[in-house]
Image (cartoon, rainbow over all chains, first blue to last red; front, side):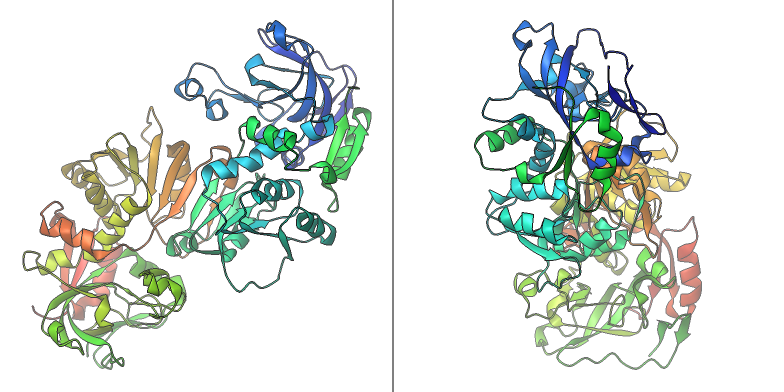
Length: 318
Length: 318
């Protein structure tokens, strides 16, 4: 099958073997999205080798769960062992034996087909288009913040970064009614945040007050230090970015100001599906480009460009 | 008056001026304790110049609050502006205009006299000796953790470090009934932790399970990275140490495992006084030495030695 592979270098291949895994479901990928984690992977993050890609919408090709066959689905990317305490408590996202689609020990979505356990797949309602459904995974990651940090109408919240994840976070948080400010570097991306209901400010702008919660989603190693500048004493910094590099942290600042730093990763899919199905969040303005998988290398280049937001790969027709 | 001063180098002086501050209370220092923060200050931490020292018990020499005069007191080290929102909410520990005794903008306790606002002073019950009272400030800092993190009998808690602060943390937490393990490098300090009711383990020992909460109080820049090794997914790391150096942090580990990192600093004095007065905590085995202020430089050297715990300075007779 056609696929984009990373083996130290990124390549488009036509002869990748079908990803058959005992007892799992085979999914024909329709659309896949390029995430910052994918861009970090090709810089060496997580030491991954194989087919990257973890944001997708697809159609079930073959499954032991007969009811799934032919259904249009999105998929939870963490495949747990299904036996440990965490998996049995429903949290396979932190199973120590887990594989992660296109990130750790499991080929991903930049291919004609992918394999996942049937329990990882969720059917997409007809009211959500392919172009929207491919955002379920990153939007779920944005919604995850609301399960970890208490945010309400009185909260002053800053989102650092203006890229795809930052834009989704703004959209996931807008419904709380909090006082939301996105801080970024690109005029047109600030405009997008404003259209989603946030205030927006260029990096370097001075603020009279510090923020209760600062969400670091810049994808830059210096973002955490900047977040510590912006947060009030006893406030919260949420870390959403994964980098390949270690970040120098003056831990004394976190101690003296008693800052809480919350690592935040994947979220449950259902809240994200609800936001999209209810038309509470419009992700379509975040699509920069949609390219064929054959042009995958060019798509990666485009996704890495500073003015870019989400670049989608069209893998199969719907 | 006699004092230990830091002006780029540490010196014993006999002619320091009396610390008179308008409207404040003058305290004759009886005993003062040397803390790791003091050792960091003489390495450059916080850019402090002047008389360090923030752990003390003293007797009120002169105060506008007549009832205080002659009383034996300990003192909250943060002196807020008394006007801002934080101060008015009772949290002058985070007032942006605050001075901090012997740490920031205010001479400290390694001197015959110190000055603090009357509202910072708390009388010490007779049942608490001078040698115990001098531990109120650091024990309050240890107790602070219990206001920030939920710890109960089911919690698996590791304390990293076996120095004075780590030992106080073990003693402050023992009352929760949590499953408590101190991880350190010095056999005799591990023994002290065991006598306080904790398990104790040498660094390098393998543990079958990760910990729910890991408290970094090693005073070492590598402690945070080690803490991230020891904590379970979605667990909590508490940062208690302040260093002069930035710490390299692989933030991706905190993100992927969704770790919460909690900066923790000063605490309210009353819980610490209660623990000492109720004989729930015995701090006396933590005293390595008690030396005269004239021997303050030697006392600093002793406090920095690896086998040392708390070194006290006797400043005035009780």
